[in-house]
Length: 129
Image (cartoon, rainbow, N blue to C red; front, side, top):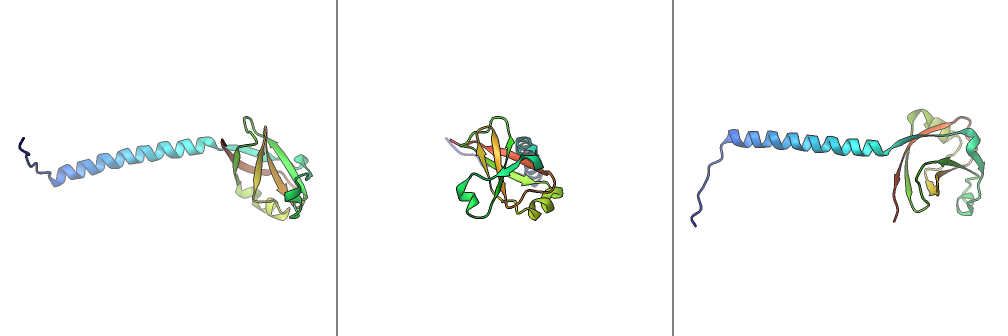
């Protein structure tokens, strides 16, 4: 079979690039929507904080912990938490840890002291295996 050479014009390349760019933009939008949909707003109320029972965390000065109920979370999961900008000063003032752990039915937070106000955050659960 003989191969035929086909000439591609600059106009055809521009059209292909435009169509490909539109498809990439659509795919990127779908990915962003999917990631944003995974996050849920939570509040860590002041009343949730109690004496810490986690020995490892307590030995580094984290005297308090707070469990925030999150439907469907299991101990094998990993929470991804982002504090709301308006809660950052409150979290910093009480020495809130930058780590959180999953327990069955909740996410557990740790701090050096009890916060003076509720802390707002976004959370998504990365399912463990």
